[in-house]
Image (cartoon, rainbow over all chains, first blue to last red; front, side, top):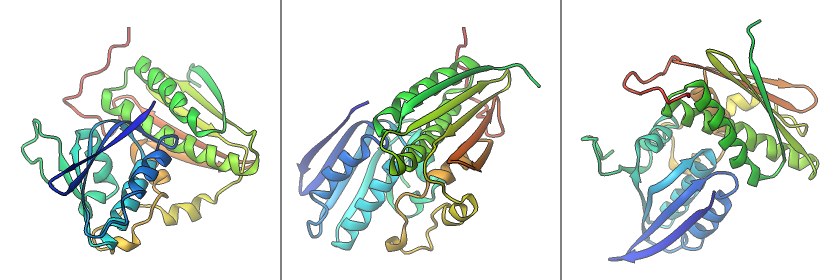
Length: 113
Length: 157
């Protein structure tokens, strides 16, 4: 039950690759990593969840916080690599209506939301 | 009353044990024959309840414990999570939780507070007792209301 966060910069997009499980134990670490850059003005960020095996409301809380902070600094956050399970979580909480969420490239034809 | 197997897990009220209890519940749900999706629902709902309990219990007493009781029936799993810490008012809490909607300004999105809402959405029944700490009772039925028809039962051998 570990969590790794890697930050890659590609064409001025900050891409966070998150690997592991996001829960009450690991969320503070994730929050800290994201908070380190959220004040950058006009940041284009991508959060890749394709290697996240578990997430609950603690993870959603972290992403909402990050989304708000980046937006307040005129940036944008895109959540990518969202599998069926995670999509359900974003759906039932209504967050997919508000945030920019892209499904994992697989099976589903209606991948982009 | 139906016969059932009862398993109790007691963990210190520390966040690093939430995942341990979650794994145990996942194993029990698998034994009962829940589908993959149902097990994932159970994992999230239980973790939400345990996380709440850990946070409430910890505020009162750093040495606190969280008790997770699981009753395995033929057709359902009941999960009971008890802290013995600070209580919250269910009705009051309930008013403040719920789905986000796109009418809301992003600035007003609430962080946290979704735990109870997720429990109610992912389980078939959720009850909260508020005497000497908070106790959450949650039930999920096998082949429940939201069962995916294309989902296969997990192997229960």
